[in-house]
Image (cartoon, one colour):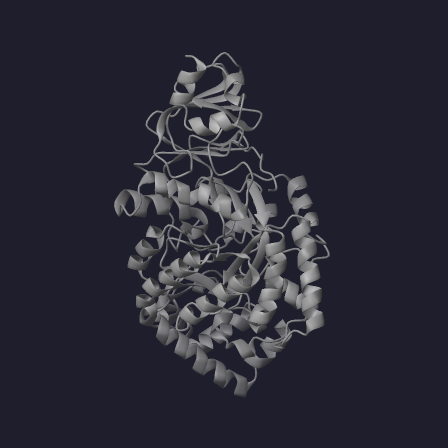
Amino acid sequence: MDRRDFLKTSLLGAAAFSLGGLYSACTVNHSFDTIIKNGVIYAGDGKPPITGDIAIKDGKVAAIGKDLGESAKLVLDAKGLTVSPGFIDIHTHTDTNLFDAPKADSRVFQGITSEVGGNCGYCPFVKSERFGNVEGFYKQLQDNKIGMNYSSLVGHGDIREAVVGPYNVKATDDQINKMCDLLDEQLSLGAVGLSYGLEYAPGCYSDTREMVALNKVVAKHDKLYSIHMRNEDDRVLEAMDEAIEAARLSGARLEISHLKAQNPANFEKIDRMLAKIDAAKAEGIDVATDRYPYTAFSTGFDCFIPIDLRDGTQEDITARLNDKKACEKMREYAYGRLERFGGPQQVVVAGCREEANAVYAGKNLAECCKISGLDEWEMIRYLLLSEHLDVNQATFAMKEENLLKIYSHPLAMPASDGLVYSPEGVLGQSLPHPRSYGTFPRFFEKFVREQKVLDMATAIYKCTGLPASRARFKDRGQLIPGYYADITIFNPDTIADRCTYAKPHTFPAGIEHVFVNGVQVINGGTHTGALPGTII
């Protein structure tokens, strides 16, 4: 095969010309580390696939073509399988869990090779004496060795608390300047952007003026502005306007996190929400969005406390839970939320740390009340107090049809909103949302194979090239010679999420092989034990 014929049969001929002599250096007589043969290869750019081989050398894709021979340390037959760039999860909360699960089990088993943590306004390093800053956090992760690639946003809530405190006050000009300086430092040290959690204290106490000032720092670095909006139900349209306005006035690139029209009364708003994204894009705002493929969200039980009563320290909030007058206001608010969700049976207790509360884990609030004899508010109050405010829920408050509309949108991508977990060790004792183990397999199972909302090439682009471009990951997210060999190989006929809310520590089906930086971490559905991940 001469060079011209090789280029015609390669996955990206145009890319080969732009890469100069790369292809001519990678002939079939060359010794590679790995050759993946006979796979249906998708580049991650949304274009149709080819059937052929991929060669890996020194952690990178070395060549792609019709027949690259078998001169390699590992030759893997991928006949009948889909070969994709490794999936990229742009919205996670893994953070310090990688220290407890360095193999990144729940991520690599579903084909994820890279992710972005530090979302929804929280990150582990801004206020930490252990890490000092994002650079210190990254160094400890890298020294510990990790099984996937990792990056993090800076949490706005942490920056605000470090400068302003945990209180419901407007930031002064001087405080905003200090927050901007702190953000600038973290972005300079390698954070990939800034995240907001405007439904949570203390981030919820900020205003658009504060957001625009911080976002201008993000724009200066050409990094990402990611937002858990101020409201995702009754005032979701107004919250979208605020998020877009903060991008418009700052020039920052906007990622709207886990887009949802929550609660039955708001299901019909999804079309108007997507129209707002279209209008922002047409105006020239750089915007995209993400969503997990489940109809239940997950958050803390403190969502049953009104925003103005979440102000202050943990001790302040605990004192209010023991104050009769404050509790009356909380009770009224909590019952209003339960009614909008559709009743207490929609809220599932997602795990408890206290042994005495194990009986409630995995049960809905109505079932918990039957066990305890308490009414709904007193049950919520009991869990908050006994679990020191740290108890989570999974609440079924969204509509499957809206997921089809979201994923059909060209600017929407799947993302888990989950964490790294492992069935082994301390993390295996928790009861996480299934999205931590099953997001990407479920996306392909439901929206490609079953619902046929997306063709395979588009779906893979939404899991690879699109999030890579949003996070500005260099040389990742596509299968191109010279790019890092993050590769996921799966069976399109069997890929599926096997988690349940009662048994979430269950690995998916259909993910056959996964490579991270050219090293195989999943082989025939089994973890190899390798830890080749890096900070990106």
